[in-house]
Every structure is written in structure tokens, then in C-alpha cells.
Length: 110
Image (cartoon, rainbow, N blue to C red; front, side, top):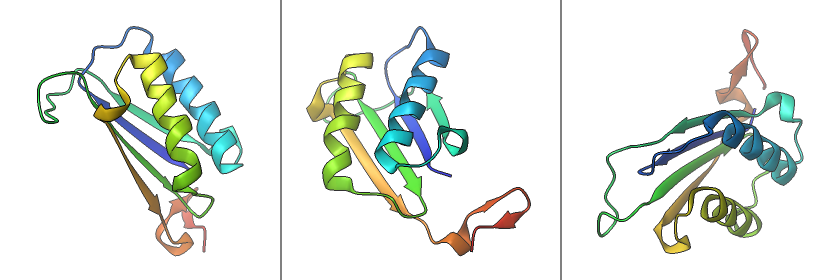
């Protein structure tokens, strides 16, 4: 049930590979099965972050298992290495969602 939503102004070539790689990273960072990680990617977005240079916004939601101070660096490094976006052009939003507010397979987790 971790969900990563990636929006970026760059045009990406191998989106499926990138989605699989970020899913593996999210699984590792949250210590949750890759089977339950959902990843969404929107490239070539109209975005502005102080200027028109490439930028990226990540939204990571999960029921617990979030540690922003430990996750920020590996996520930023991933975006920098895979998309070529400078670290100072990446924002990350962490959302710890209550189990009663997250559903899968027709029912909530709590």
C-alpha cells in the first residue's frame, strides 16, 4: 500500500523500467512487499520551480513505515541519477495515512 506519485518536467525514455526501479526502492525503504507498492509517473509536465530548469515532485503515501529524514536522501539521489534532475529541484511530500482511510481489495486496512 505504499504509493509513490512522480511528476516531472523532463521527458523520460524507459518509463516502465523507472517505475519498477522506484517500486523496488520504495519497498526497501518502507520494508513492505513490492507486491503492494503502487507507482505512478507523469513526465513532460508543465512545471515551474523558480525557473524553467528540470524539476520533480514526489508524493509518497503509506500506512506507517515512513521516515522522511532517512528516506529523503535515497529518493532524491534516485531522481538525480535516473532523471538528471538536480537535488535542489526536487520536492518530496510524505503522507502517513491512517489505516481506516486506505482501502484495498474492497475494504479498508483498519
